[in-house]
Image (tube, rainbow, N blue to C red; front, side):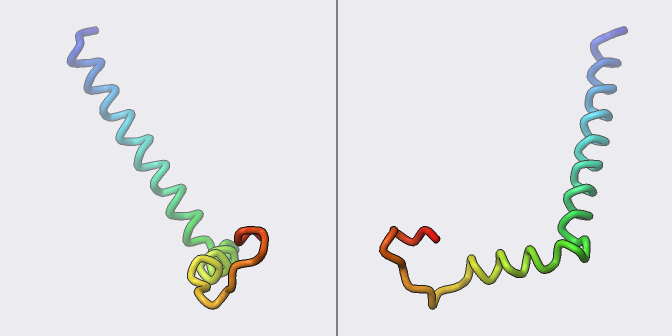
Length: 59
């Protein structure tokens, strides 16, 4: 096995693993069951009307 063979195999394997992880994250983000969770996180992140509490903003 030469260096070029190992390098090519490694590059192809890494690309396939990246594509698989990307598709898994995309499926997780677009899964209908996770919609309410992301909506709640969005509302919390963008809630500008909330006043700070006495404990430094921690709830």
